[in-house]
Length: 345
Ligand code: FUB
Image (cartoon, rainbow, N blue to C red; front, top):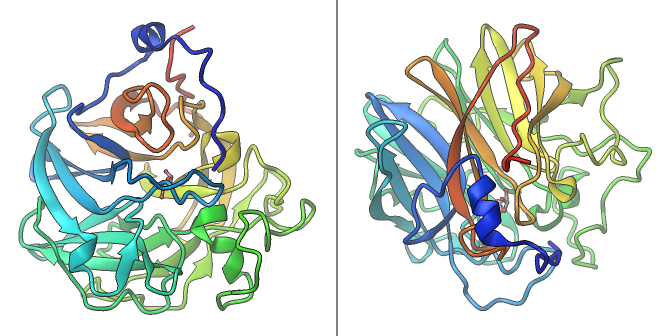
């Protein structure tokens, strides 16, 4: 992930114009997956650190080691840090890069889903279980069978079925799984193995979860994102195609799949009639933030809908030292979502 020069930005001015402030400032946080459990908001973010790794386009400098869970009694209240919920050293199969997690609740247990690079350098997705929403979480000894790539988002449908959406390009390795198994051929470059611009874009993956939420109940499938004419988005359509940061929420019976476009820095959404899609591209939820990455979740709290997102304002633009924020979003009567600008003009 390349660094863009932020020398021209006056961060004092930017923070005055920001539509929201960091939810916590004592640690760096990113990729916030928010859930509303028993009248309280729980946020499952990445915990950013500077581990001294060199910057590269594969995101090696995102060298996170653990997760902290945050909670809020109300959307305007302070966010409380509950400390380390899971550390990479306690996950037998994982070696490094604890990237964007998500959580789910079922039958009195809380499940933390997380991607990490295994000892062979391949990203897998694991699950860890706790009796408490804030952990500590006990990891399963192995990653989820047939899991790969990054950014798990687990959605519970109204019939009690759970589905995981996942995937991410470049450092997230999705392009190396195009033929169903990991393409270990060199080069380890972010753009090698990607489809050509006029080919179908790589699509996010979906798999139904088993009843115990510990495994996939089926082989992951493509969750297609299509354009207004019903055609799958193309790889060259970089302002609309999926890159990473999958999320799914349901609104008025429709399935809203939202995601980051990565190198064009938008959070976009597409709407479908069932959890598997296809999802028709509808527009943007969030314009670019300061920092290369953008990643979000959408959560309903007391009949209002909120976008949890991040930027790099707290670190004055250091891409891998981010801070999570929250802003209300509006579903419009035509089924779209009003686009948010993270900073006022
Ligand atoms: O936090 C590491 C990676 O950056 C996430 O997995 C991506 O979605 C991006 O936010």
